[in-house]
Length: 163
Length: 454
Ligand SMILES: Cc1cc2nc3c(=O)[nH]c(=O)nc-3n(C[C@H](O)[C@H](O)[C@H](O)COP(=O)(O)O)c2cc1C
Ligand code: SF4
Ligand code: FES
Image (cartoon, rainbow over all chains, first blue to last red; front, side, top):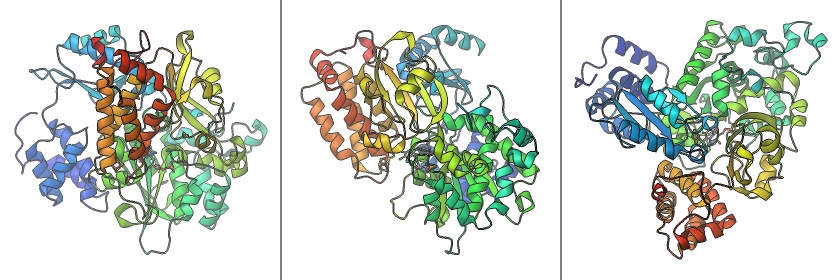
């Protein structure tokens, strides 16, 4: 997954087919950029500088246009991501119900600071803004997918054990 | 009380197209069984409103009039009546008209659109068909926030079902009307919920809001006239067509038609979604529906319409929750995200958490917003670390006065509203914190990264 991507290899075979299908949905090539980047990330785990260039070539736009977008949005990883990712919501509804304690407990249990991943790339903690799940406060999103809510220290311990 | 959208919010269940169609009581829940036994056409089941609109409204302008009469308001936050918005769309430019659905749901405290997408995406799709017919739209986009992985999957599935059935595509319901729908994922940015930031993002760029005018209705996506509506706004359209605009208007309060989904969170016993009439009192939402304050504690404050709304003190909750009554109280109905704060909450830290959000999410195009939200967060962080200085409150009030009103988009106003209202209504708490280097509230429910050292 973390192999260096060759610019020319990315948009071939299945990936090219999927990308072409995405392109066909939009009025302009550039409009497909966010979805193309999601596709690249699904394939490679993150969006490397080389991948940015490949995307720019594929869409016929300047690499800087791709780079600007990759850095503007929070969901694109620019380095290989950790295997298990705890994205903890820190906005008001979650904060009111103890989000800070949840982050503190995770930091202690995993030995990783909020905003970082462990050297082996096993896990990371990231504080994020409201995920649209305040009814579950305090909550986190696991691996950019499942919402886990009503968190307690015990629940965190169990969650860590399962990974 | 009758439920419309939330009737479908059954835990663990997503309505398929077939189930939605068969669900005769869906839109007709209050009509006696005798009347609905006469068959599907009368029963107003799923997709009946869209199927029958071509005959019912041979001229789409009549459909727009019907929606106007319903007093439906824009439920994404601004409350602008969709019927009015649609009449501003020029139909003679020679360019296509686009429909864009705002499913970015980023306003903190708001989580309602997720329920529609997750439990019955067909409500939205049918609403989109109606809006498309009204505005002569043949291509529509749904912009869904990137973090909504599961709702996105359900939505894509729903769209596929509708295509497979021939309800989307070249001839919807066999009529001479084409509609294509594309689902587009965002990638994490609150500002892309702002309609012009959303359009930029949809065009493959950074989500930098555009200067208005021109409004998107005139110059929107790819330079073409564009209708932008929120998920929930569109999802009420099938009910309006099935049961009439007068019925819908009567459900709510003056000029504020129908029900809406209140997202209630924070220190209540039963956080969740409550579908209630516009104009219902805030007290009733909190105490009758959301189970009151958890642990039998006392109420301290409420954010009535998403994080960007001005805050209410506990004695201000006898207010009707609609767009006009809340504006009259210098706050807003917004996205109907009700965040409840109990007596254990430190307002200094609550405001810090709030302003940190805007500091993080400001796109940085306008200096009052970029600098204002940045400074305020820094000052509040310092105060909550016990290093406040005399004059901080006045400084904050100064910043507040120049931050809103002068910027490209309304994010800055949305940041100024909580800032000013917290400072005005809880000033003594800020003064105390600055003077004593600690919170006036013992055992506060709210900790921040730096306040943990106390
Ligand atoms: C900073 C900001 C963020 C917004 N976020 C959202 C959002 O997440 N979802 C939404 O529907 N509207 C959001 N809006 C409101 C939209 O700009 C727009 O008014 C709305 O999508 C129109 O749909 P409606 O008329 O059906 O409500 C936001 C506005 C601002 C200023
Ligand atoms: S007000 Fe703030 S968020 Fe809106 S355009 Fe200006 S800088 Fe960006
Ligand atoms: S505040 Fe945490 S999910 Fe909304």
